[in-house]
Image (cartoon, rainbow, N blue to C red; front, side):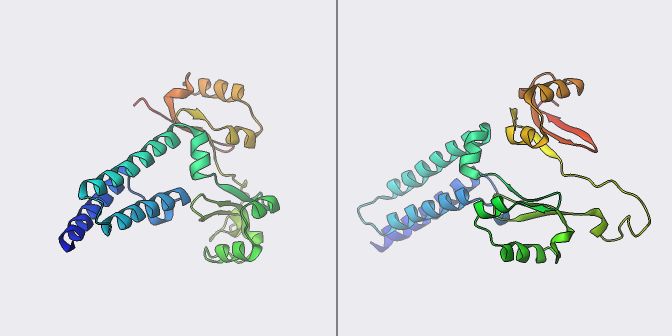
Length: 225
């Protein structure tokens, strides 16, 4: 019995490491709720099978690899199709836009004002008046863009006039149009296709990613080197 537990525990550990390596490396700060769920379930599968004498070592390996394969397929689908990515990984939420707090997004994410203020203080921001944009990321983290006049050694202090910048918008992600990005800009698909043509690209599928900002225009990376 003890030998069986020892062997299955060792095999389970190797299987967990193998599946983790196959699924890719991520920092803890990048882990999404979906990643957390599959890790917990995978650990539960190994734990339950180790102490059950009716389950053999081969069955432990099979269970871990089967779960890993299912998650791997889901990850591939999420990578290829935005609709799967949105369902499994979620989307970031714009909590503050142009200095205006979006109450609906706060309620949608069950986020209280004091929670938001706490997250801002952790970034060294102690007033909402400093915040131009704030994004609640899919991993629960907060990304903030402050007004330029609030940044250290500001142009304002140097008596310089500076046009406020806006964050860039992702329009193409791995060969697919990001509809939310186009809507955010108030544009349509025809505008995007014509715009990338002027940049020398004729097929959206050839583009790995494309960002657009009002100040700097397009930033495009294609699959072709």
